[in-house]
Amino acid sequence: MNTLSERAKVYFGSIQHGRDALFASLGAKLNKLIELLDFSTIERGDKVAVKMHLGYYDGCQTVPVFFVRRIVQAVKKAGAYPFITDNPTSAYNAVDRGYTSETCGCPIIPVTGVKDKYTHPVTIGYRGVDTLEMGGVLHDADALIDLAHAKGHANCGYAGAIKNLAIGGYSAQSRWNKIHGVEDSIPWWKPDKCTPEHAQRLVEACPYSALKYDAAKHQLSIEWFRCHNSNCLECYKVDKKVRCLDIKPEAFAAFQELMVLTAKQVLSRFNEKKRFFLNVALQITPDCDCLGIIQPCVVPDVGILASHDIIAIEQATLDLIQSAGLIERSIPPYFKHVNLNPAAKLHPFTRLWGQMKNPYLITEFGEKHGLGTRKYELIEVLSPEETAKVTPPEHEFERQPTFY
Ligand code: SF4
Image (cartoon, rainbow, N blue to C red; front, side, top):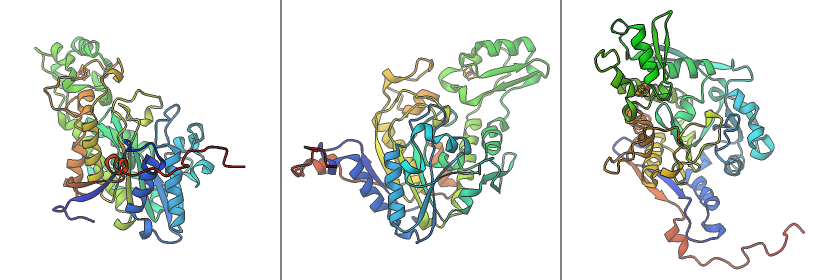
């Protein structure tokens, strides 16, 4: 484990390769990443939770089963008992997206049991969120492999290793009502300044249907994930004279800070030497896997990252996504206010989701709460430059069926 003054090691296998050969491709790089992560601290007989997102409905752009199986095999080689875990619904219908105990090589166990009730209470104490129900299965495990898909996210710009535990490690009630609900803890609307007619005008002004008005209760509500904040601000044009709206960056930030605190609770269950983080930055979609749909990829494939430091891996993943850049032609048409100004040095996810959903906040809060360090040393394995110099062995291609 690193002290904050040290740089954490983040190992990286790029999708780009120097040769069209097995030894240079991402599969070989994953083998190297697993070797460098070093599963020798996993003890014989340990129950190892491989926490991942198994998708939802048609949302199949998750971590390819090919990589999952390889990691599972490595854990088994260490003499331990791996199992895949995610929320009960995603686990139950994971077969629809190709994940089974046969394909993954180990059982798939719902993180909170089949009825979402096998949980362990944890105390949080943040902006009215007192306790949360952590998945009992995670609580019981001896070691943790946080195998995350890196992509965009409608609430916070980015989702990777932290969100995989922070949201994915808890019951539905905790996840949806309490963790997502924290954004409402920051006042953003002054009801006494707003008439029902004005509220209705605000609702009609929002191009993303983020605002809803309940006339009976004189209650204006906002769906934070729909709000494109600084990229949009159409409601503010209508509100110029009344000034009853005050959408603040703090509302979005609260969600990110709470995620850090909930992830911290999960991590605290495990010995530091038995925590392993992998971010798979392939099929980088604008929004989360839990949307349950197939989305266009808005950032070129980056590769796979591995580290023992959850903050360092998130920081490195965000930096690599920033370098890869936004694929403008792939932006879905319902993103109506994307900031494509080249003079603005913005992260691709900030261009999409607005500056109040700053993806780097998760690492700032993570460092503040002692989860790791944003300072990292990126160690690329089997880089294109390195493998380009290697002469491929002959007979690498299948000349005839090998199973005869
Ligand atoms: S900023 Fe835009 S998206 Fe957000 S509530 Fe206002 S109009 Fe809707």
